[in-house]
Length: 172
Image (cartoon, rainbow, N blue to C red; front, side, top):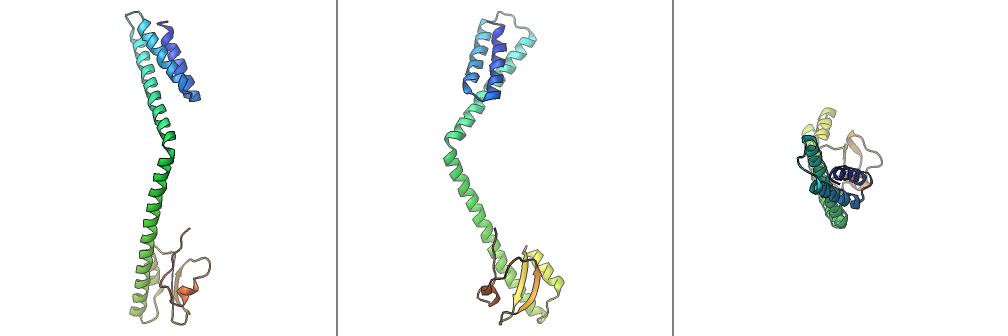
């Protein structure tokens, strides 16, 4: 069995790698152990190297099995943590974008006041890029468009046009 054990170990390690069945990994470990215990000394260099590589493969296999089992057993808790983390990240990003929208609205109103009513298009473009806005629009008290820069698909909400809301942000 001493010379067959390492080969059987490698064969069952290969079966485990191809099928993922943990019993094959266990049989590979048993075959390796039996092969080492029943082998008659001295062991030549290549047999030693092969045995060590087979042992490393078996140990790596058991480590991988443990990780997979841990993930499968803890999947619901892991998924709940990830959903919470992603939700927090999304909430933070949306809050940041909301604040940027407010700052862009302030800067647009200030630019309008500084320019005396006619905002140069390049200043409007610079403002839009600085605040990473898809579009900037300025309406007068009656809801008429005064200045526009960017791309917006769909209608601008009437509450923004009438001045009930200073800015609007929506992200899908």
